[in-house]
Image (cartoon, rainbow, N blue to C red; front, side):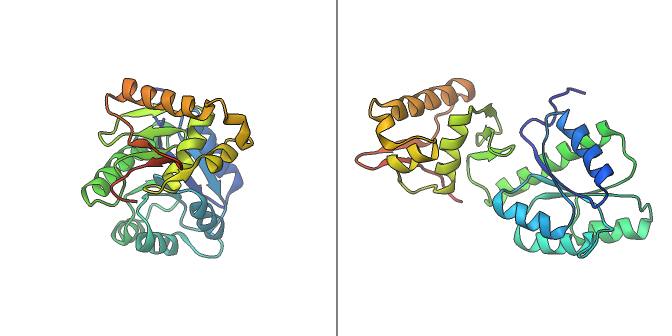
Length: 234
């Protein structure tokens, strides 16, 4: 299995055992998954408000709201893939989780390659369903914003500046974003870009995406304002 199999897949882990949480996170990070870890439901919900994930790895026996409650909550408001990773190998519990909306169920301890393969399978399936139901945009940012995904699924890695630029434009998709706002997001004062450095960044990004993916990025200049990323839906 390739060490970079998880590239472009954002994973959230909810596990109250710190040792298990760190072990799983490290194993997945080594395979290039983008990983964020949380100890309980509250931390997870706060994290998802800041950035979504592609697949959630969820323990059942948690302090406060348990894994069953989390599955019910998330299935009502969002559509990440959900993998239950638990020490419980009871068939009734497995059936209950799957009927509530979990995509897969694995019993600890699990071999890292099997875990990775399951995550990839869930990610592909849920992304395909979302595209078919029209719940996602043509273009997406995954892996905490470090990877741009085209409508056909092809991907291209982004630099720090490209990630910052596209993150802001995706956040305000279908709206013209002022040059000054983009410049400040990049960490500079507006006059820093008087020599058209921003235009050069946009031009290089367009060319990079076109060359790598064979399709143009729907990013256009708005005269007298700035730039806009035109997407069909949000």
